Amino acid sequence: MKIEMPRAIERRDSEGVKVVPIVLDRSNRREQPFISKQALPTDAKPILETKHWPDPNGAWQQVSDKLRLMIRE
Image 1 (cartoon, rainbow, N blue to C red):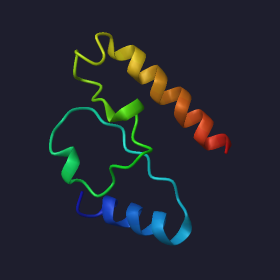
Image 2: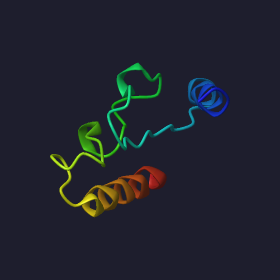
Image 3: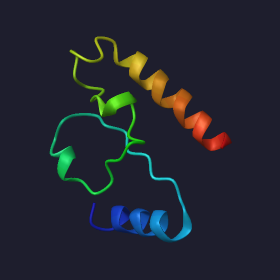
């Protein structure tokens, strides 16, 4: 968080690099500078929260599919 994230955000802002957070749990995610509309899975619903993803494999499949589409853009 102290080295990689500032660099990723800097590159996003200066070079247009895509930074796509993958939300695993609720741990202070709202305070993070990288949470954006591109957070995965959809609506930034944490993968490890069973109320959103009873089967986390569905979440991982969605993450994989959406990353594949973003890479093609």
